[in-house]
View 1 (cartoon, rainbow, N blue to C red):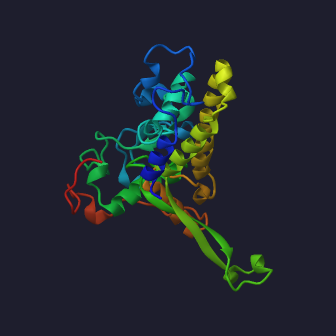
View 2: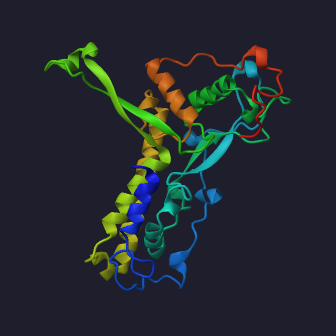
View 3: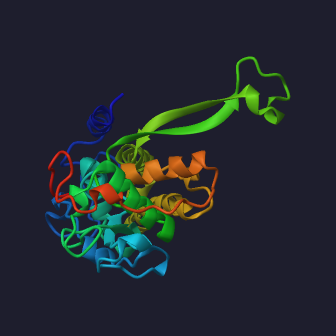
Length: 296
């Protein structure tokens, strides 16, 4: 089932627009102003008040490529994406608005390294990140992720990736756990947005009930809804921060394709120290990559 189909099914199973999203009956007074329940979801990254992961300082100046000190700045990342995830579920947005939840509150943010159109690679008259070849992007992003222990925040979050683990092979004996050659990979595909939307759907339905005792106590509703969404943000942040450990591939969520590629590279190397990445000498003076693409 596609995520869009899941969202449509979830929304169609919820109360009509002019009904309480909790119990499906006549609207209650949760203290919101007229029209609050229809407020458009707006993404305000600056309101997240993020600092760089691990307290690192932004490096906006272009550094010497031979030292592998590539420039980067910070992206204020919504743990629960405001537009791509939260806004997709209108009934949940209504619940959260009634409970005075703010998707742009600081608890829902994390600072991650990214690039910017003013940053150049590898020298002051070099190229923008978007002009680099894929090998060059790997050199830059892998070096920065290895240095900071944080996921590279460039590109959309909707790409799919394979989450894998080991399971006993079909012909494995009872003591398969001690035999590497009797294990085989297993896993499933998921994407960042898809995983978060699934969690949000679960939260939405956890509050939707014909009896809805939560409707009898507005203060409890505010506390419960706010807490569940904050707990989800905390869960997502914990998952992303696994990336900073010795096994970045243990993370189940990746905000970019390069972050996932880096984790899989480290997994193949089983935690070995990264090699010294640098931009290939043959492309140091190129003004464009093969495709001539510009921007991010």
